[in-house]
Image 1 (cartoon, rainbow, N blue to C red):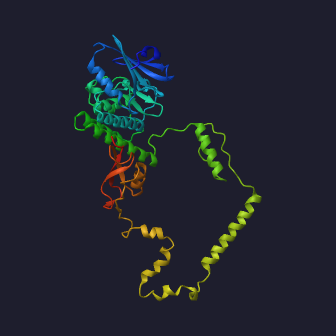
Image 2 (spheres, helix red, strand yellow; image 1 turned 135 degrees about the vertical axis):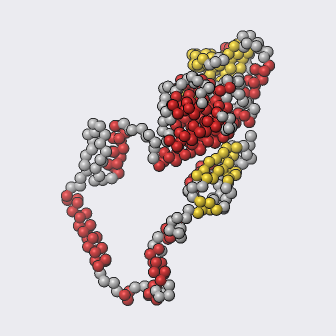
Image 3 (tube, one colour; image 1 turned 45 degrees about the horizontal axis):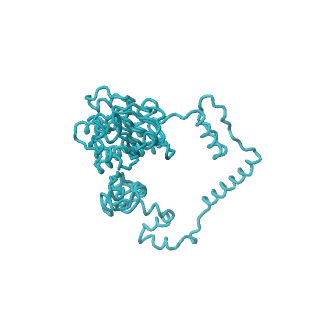
Length: 416
């Protein structure tokens, strides 16, 4: 610990007043870097062993989901904690200033839940995940500010994450009625860019957490499934997609005109004056018309010209009486890929063999599952395999399945 910490670190401006302390923008004059300075009252005195023990344990956690503790200083009546600075701002400052859509909230909260599980492996628990105790980075990631002090029961673990989602959906810095059922509260707030099925699934999941029937892990897996389903839906058809402005439409239509000649763009945005029909001069059209006419004449002659039986393939005629099915052979050999992939029952069969995902990276496993028509979910766990490699799957490889089945795989996050 630096004995001259008060001279080494300089506070510039207050960022946030937390329930147990104040957060400042600061500077490390020794290393010439930005830092965050958290100050709180030392009510128990500088010899409070329990508080020191919690701080020491928290300072060993190096995780993107938590603002890392660089340094600490205990004075007679105050404590100074130096935290890593990340480009961003307190989440509570952005509650009403930003648009919080369904996919954005689900992704943020699911990632924060994974961070909580990682901290539990280091025996760091009990901290608050309320909006006032979270930092939102510019790369859209939440980090816990104070993770060495215990939070209120409604701000901890799975219940805390559910309360956080309500804060984000409603834009409220504080939930007015904590005793109200979460699902009832969610019915009242708008879930932007969520389908009716997704909204109902989220409310059912939150209700199970509120009733004590779903653990933190179950909540995280449920949110990851919702996030994956939302990405699939967005690929097919965006829900409540924002209407592009006139400038965006202009850029899009300019690109379309450049790529496709002689096409009139038929979208008519307000006050648009740039749509011009592209025409080809007649002297350029004449060769095209002549060439097209010749092609039509050649096709008509080929179709109407009487066939010569002597020029036909003798092998087809010779086997006509013994095996009529061979007449189809010349037709299906023109498209071998369709003939080999088409099911014998006229397209009704969707049977597949479950692919092997073990040993692949997470992204390759996702692509492989999708290429076989499977829905998938994954779990990130500590394992001896290299980080990001799939080490287990369910169902097992080479087992029979059907397109649309679910497959689950486990991704290693490395040796703990």
